[in-house]
Amino acid sequence: MVLTVSGKQRTTGINKARHGAAERHFLREAVLVFLGGLAGAALRVVLANFLNFSDFGFYNWNWTYLFINVIGSFAFGFLAALFRVRFPSMRNRWYVFLAEGAVGSFTAFDLVFSQISLIALQPEVWILILYVGVNFAACIGCSALGVWWGSGKRPAKKQRKSPRHSPLPARRKQGAAAARHGY
Amino acid sequence: MWVSILVIVTSAFGTALRFCQDRLFCRLKGNTAMSIFAASLIACLVCGILNALVTLVEVSPLLLEIVCAGFLCGYSSFAVISTVAALLARPKGGWKKSLFYSFSSFLLSLCFYFIGFFGVLILH
Image 1 (cartoon, each protein chain N blue to C red):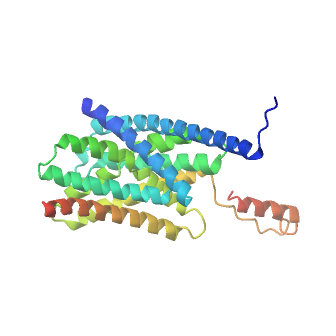
Image 2 (spheres, rainbow over the protein chains, first blue to last red):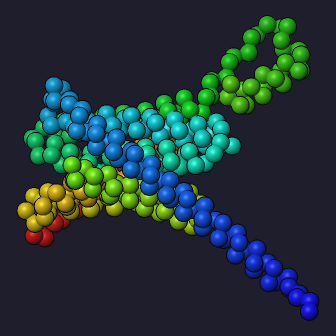
Image 3 (cartoon, rainbow over the protein chains, first blue to last red):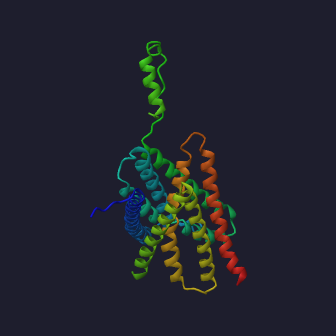
């Protein structure tokens, strides 16, 4: 007896196998994110319990979470640029574990707003505006610094204006390529 | 000790949930920026509601600790928002988009927090 498989059946089988592999890949990544989240949250809890910035007391400002958010923003920006921009061929698992899991769980967004509500109870409005501005600017600035450092890009060097360099097409081409890649 | 362990475990669950939500948005819309934006708004709204309930002595502060410092801290992340904003600024002229994204996410989160907080206080 000869068993024959039609083209449609074969295609369905291949699609099912692909779908199963994608599902397994997604589940593996979700488990890695969970494990990274455990590590990041544990680090946050330890830092929040042991870091004491009470000497820098200033209108109920929570310096501990500001410090945690700044460090986390820099680390996430650095890792995102390193894995996504500079070395895109590097293994995705490390990015998922370190950045999405550990650093994502390390920083706290909603606790900043809890603190804002406490500061808002005080009569001085400028303190509230300053706290929001400092949090906002410090985290985005550190994240941008991390992205810049992680991507490894340097501003393009200026070409020397000596006549020796300009007429050579090979050198001009080389300079243009370097400028295009941001080095 | 047990509260800290619960905070850590719920935070990891929140991070895993955000990851799943990001993948869903990535499949539907092609990027994760809106997913992160939505997560921050939801987290701030729930945090505001819980803070108001604790103020009214309706729920215990322990629940606030576990949900806000645990689950919601994992679910919404300052680092992810600021990195999305920084990465949006990378292309030429992208700084306007980046500034708009970061300002809107921060200000709307603040608004959602106060809506949740004062909404519960007024309704009570």
